Image 1 (cartoon, helix red, strand yellow):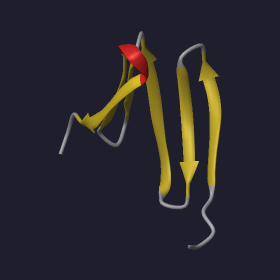
Image 2 (tube, helix red, strand yellow):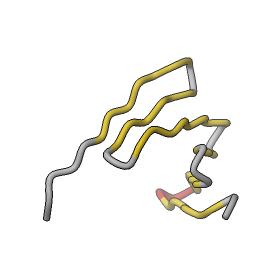
Image 3 (cartoon, helix red, strand yellow):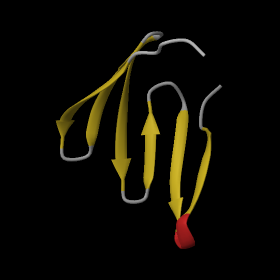
Image 4 (cartoon, rainbow, N blue to C red):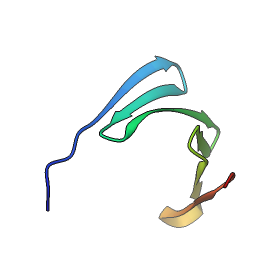
Length: 57
């Protein structure tokens, strides 16, 4: 396993800029749903479950 770089900078109440070795992206949380600029979607579900998927190809 190699060494990885990740950093998250808060931009507002529910917004971040995420830095990693492959570049930067933005994330925005709206209630239990988080979207990022690379097409990811994350949903917090009841009972401690989470859903992770894609909203763009």
